[in-house]
Amino acid sequence: MRDFEFHAPKSLTEVYGLLEQHGEDARVISGGTGLINMMKQDLIAVDHLVSLQNLPNLKSIDLKNGRIELGGLVTQQEVATSDVVAKNIPLLTETYKEVATVRVRNAATVGGGVSHGDPAQDPPTALLVLNADIHISSSKGSRTQSARDGWFIDYYETNVQPGEVVTGVSIPVPNKNSKFQYTKFLPRTADDYATVSVAAQSLMEGDTVSEISLSLGAVNTTPILASGIASILVGKKPTAALIKEAAETVRNEVAPTPDFRGSAEYKTDMAVVFTRRTLASILGIG
Amino acid sequence: MTEQASLNTVKVNVNGKDYSADVPARRTLVDFLRYDLGLTGTKEACSVGVCGVCTVEVNGVITSSCITLAIQVDGAKLTTIEGVADGDTLHPLQDAFMNHGGFQCGICTPGQIMASRALLEQNSDPSEDEIKDWMMGNLCRCTGYYGIITSIQKAGEVIRLGK
Image (cartoon, rainbow over all chains, first blue to last red; front, side):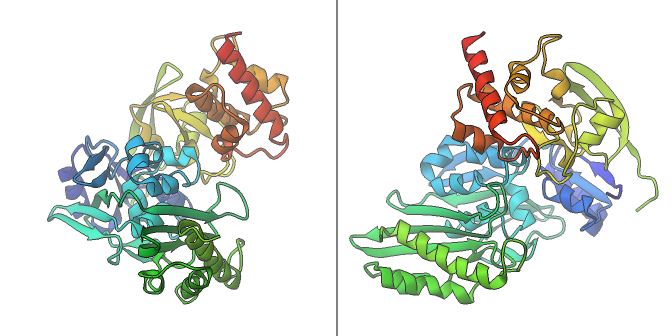
């Protein structure tokens, strides 16, 4: 790893100052589980690391106005083990507890994860399905962007701009009758990245589907929200044939990278298969 | 980047003892422990946070010291494998790993002990599935895992029953 200067300011104002001063030579670090690995492999080089570790805030999990508010510096293990999260948005618990291992989750943060933009990471699939908002701030002020609104741009590229810090993620508490599932296809080891992952949420009105959203991880340069499923299923009584038709729509939305977890063709087939199984499970079809 | 970035003073308390050393920012925690503080009980294997060999406890939670910078833990309280025994009295996990075939070559053992110690502190009676779930990030390439699982269960018994 190349050497660099390390800064650990005690306020966001100081963070913004350092980011402005050093521009693109600076990177923000929180837990560092992603960034340090990239630096060790010389995938990125930085001259200045600005650590958020000494900031006094951004470490709380709150239920406010029907939303779960996760501070940017909350660790992924804290989300995975939070009672208020499990009670209100179990899909978040399901995805955060799947991240790597407890050692990594103890260091990795909510804000770090959504900034890093790892396309195979578990929580972003839930954040897309649940229509989460991401809070960002800089010396110019604060802004909020929907995770669905182009937050995940490309392979390890997100819409956090130079000078900006992700300060939190806000997720609306879904209808109590909603059904959820996170399916992670792991043909190698239990702590591996997913070969294909699928997160989904549905709501029924009587025996017809009133809402459905589904996202996939690890099968494109970013996690993706499937766009063709709702139009096939909403307003209909779910059947095995309809679910199969809906699952087929993801075939043209995925563009997986072949690696030792499988060829692009195999991963594409698995994306369809796991989409179909996830839909069948949450819609209660054999 | 300048050829020589400045050194940073990192102060930590490891196993109850205060240490301080001046290191470059790029110094990983595992290298800091081994080369700057001389605490060579912690090992490094994969270097990318996957294998669990370098597991140490930082402010009460376990983490991978190979993907943590020493400077990130400035001011922290750490426990390493050297701090697990109580003087000459081994921790129940250390006894159990010796008595129940929990290790062979021993490279992964400091990490296995640090990770399982954190589990038993939360739950001294974990099921086999709970042990597998918690320990899945600690790889062993020679013993096989059943000796490790048995060792953890036996140590849990000792901790629960106080014997």
